[in-house]
Length: 223
Image (tube, rainbow, N blue to C red; front, side, top):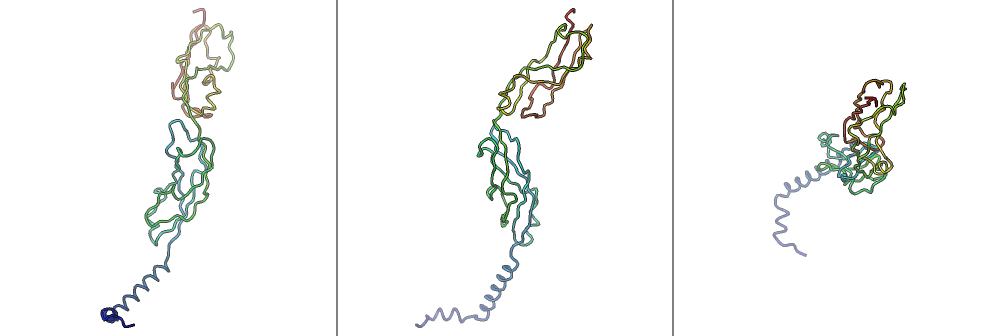
């Protein structure tokens, strides 16, 4: 079969130049493929986001994972640990303690950077349902008093506290206990006042939203 003249002309014209260009292209491809991709490992944090208003993250373990990435030579120097994280959507996870497998969709990577391995690839999350409740203040005492406590009139302000926490815990609570009062500091002949601070930090699954302190006034009934 005889080739058309224009085809023969195309391949025969500047044959040396075309052969050299093809050779250089093959050489360049071979050079790049031999260099390949560089592999590197980073320690990145677990970030739990999209928490519903009535859900609280009680625990996430581990807090960091190691990810192994590959990228073209030199590109890994532009990727920093603080730029990467594993983001887990809490609104897609049932409440309770769950084991979640991490996949590539949870990590946003720069262009031309690829995920190879995650270690560990399973994390444990504990999500609890939270509620806000108003609980009465409960007084506690320690030490000794020379006369019975019922000889005093005890005034508390405010009488209630606003707390938020695990619904399973708050359903069992009838009152909020505050730090105890030292009975030795009560004056049997005069009124005594105590300003008791309430720690707002979360303890035992609940957090006190207010007040910050409770004022307790103890007055001898003879007054």
